[in-house]
Length: 332
Ligand code: AMP
Ligand code: MG
Image (cartoon, rainbow, N blue to C red; front, side, top):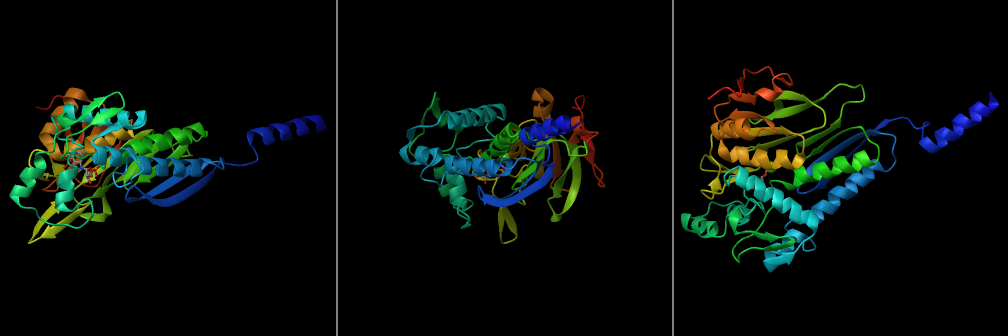
């Protein structure tokens, strides 16, 4: 009996049985936004490893960080970047192709012009917009292995995709530490790892674009990213007109496709993030068409008129007290 007890104690010392799974949480500011990490684990290092991974990616991908790859591309115009950055750029370009250019990481000069980057908002003249549009277009990016070249008047901003990518990497880091239950929110870009500790799905709230303190509904998920792009997230008003940060690369102005918000639910954060921005630009009908054609994601749309639409794949997972319509594969 005594031998058995000693053996069990040794096993516990090695495997950490004495330490029970506990909620560990942290709020931090990175990538221009507030991030909340909630990890259910007995690991003493998982949370700090996740934090470190976010800071690493912030430094690598922030176009304002002179030590990062994007800063170097924008200033030197030809740069050899890490293979990680090259892979993100390839995914961004593939999303541009998939969405007919609605998603475009070369909208940076337009974000600058409208003051969305440095939060010094202003309304540019048509001439200024036309001149900035000259440098805009994902087709202008040349990427061969890890070498990227952009024209003199082009600049790159990964604001529409970086947080989703970061959430994928954080989930990887947590999994590597043995975590099987976590929920992370990188400025409203939510990624659910596994299920709750009681085995139930995570319930992720979708913000009501008209009132940030209310929800338009919730979606039950496990191992999914739930990422929202909305005109309510960064905007300014002049003379009763609202201008927001999601730019239509075709016009150089805030996208006006009839939507207030789009939430994309997908297996990966990078896909959900890039698509949420793209679908916001594309509007409801084109987005529904893309969903039918390519799939691989689900979405919740809130229109300018306040109507809510969801794609059929989340019919059973979406809960709302609002009326909503379901976009199905057979609709036309
Ligand atoms: P999100 O909040 O993910 O929709 O991304 C919006 C951010 O992405 C903006 O703040 C810009 O940095 C950048 N952005 C704006 N318009 C576009 C676009 N059409 N395609 C890609 N990125 C964009
Ligand atoms: Mg996005």
